[in-house]
Amino acid sequence: MTSPNVNHILIVGVGGLGTHMVHEALERELTVSVMVRDRGRLSTRLDADTIERLSRITVGDATDPAALDRAMQDVDVAISGNGAHRRMALAMAEAVKRNGVQKLIWPAGGSNAMEEDGVTPAYKKLMESWPGAEQAYRAHQACIDAIRGTGINYVIFGPGRMTPAGRRSPDVGSTVRINRVAGMSISYEDAAWVMLEAATTSGWDRELVSAATPH
Image 1 (cartoon, one colour):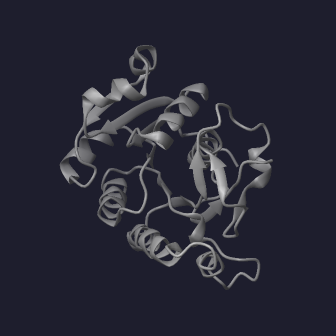
Image 2 (tube, helix red, strand yellow):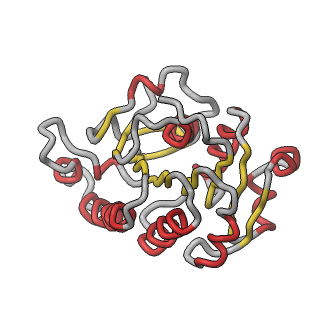
């Protein structure tokens, strides 16, 4: 279901995922603001034309309440480009609540979804081939718990490994699953589509979703 009142998106952190989310949001003709720690580095991520199209650039630390309050003025939905950072997750969630932002979209990990039985966390199966799976799960789960604890509206996206592909898949939407593992590999382009779809629609609100780049 489309959320008709979502127009102004704030993207916090313009790295690999954040860069692609900026492009995805602008392609959807949304008003896009960003929050970054280093204004100078933004030009290494986005070209001059894209920067010119941004509504607002806030320079600050995403764990600083005052900086977050400045960034979230007149924003409908806040999206994080960074995951596995509990202090940032909590600070952003509290700022969303404080500033009347409709919801927070947060990237976690594929290890935090469930296996097909709906009971077993995916990290337990992944431990067979990935020794760090439990550690990653716990780091992401701490963020998820912090966000949920504030009582705000949210969508958690649990992707697998993200890499650039150079284009978005036309049918990535068909791979989206709620609280189940869709796959452990997704392109930045497809991940950005899922994050923006979560921001601008309501069907996944208060859920953890996963997706994978179709092969």
